[in-house]
Length: 335
Image (cartoon, rainbow, N blue to C red; front, side, top):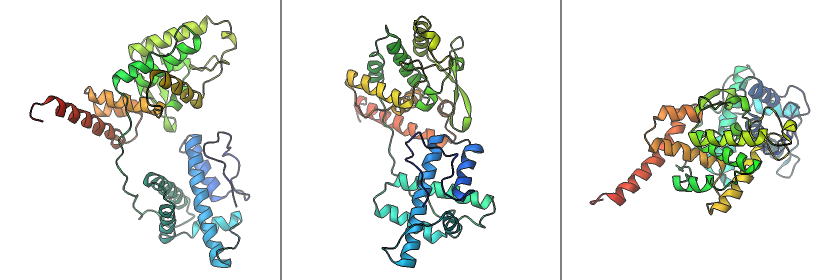
């Protein structure tokens, strides 16, 4: 059976074959995602893990059909390829049913279905199969969950915690200011280079998903925080050994990781007495919600967030609407 490491493990090398036979269908699909669709390594690993689970399901079914429930479920790469090409809609539905029986949440099932839909669309495109067995299966209706959002007073408490007299404290203040000022993803934050920041024009150039670039305004607080951090960085005695390109560096002078950003955020949440379940993505949610609450145009917020679909951005209008309703109930004399 083929193996793919944990999607969260950054050591996974998807350029290596994921099955013993070369040119496996899944490996071709992985190469396509990275070379042609420009998927991030993390997203590609998630797709690979979903397909591994589907292949395990197909192998288990094959073992039950040929040897009974206790038989071996090991298939060769060639056999897996053949199984994948003979999948029909009923088999996909059985896979979805098994996921529900195992109490997978609707969003996870929807993601795995999306993976299969993309994979089989690829096989049709490459003429391996005539039709997509997933195309007629509807995505499970999702429960509406509004993203968590910090209030402005909570944001102020969080941003005031780093000790900006030190290099790392100034870095942390600049890092948090940029996350909230722009709504960028944490992966985009750590990928920033000094050259991406135009402090004179108060904008930052961001490389987003699919290598798409966008320009986002920087608020005065973020500009001042970056200027202060860069000033301390230039005057640090170790500055010649720092990564010359990376904007945000760790204590060793190398590019900061997303995991380090989360650890630093946890530290300041604790110090500010805020909910420890808040994540860097919560600052992105807070940015979008506060922008819309103050009357920003929905399409402008979509552009700044780097959302491909406007419907993805519209969830923040629901969150803003709830706040307006609460304020109405509290303020209107006949509410």
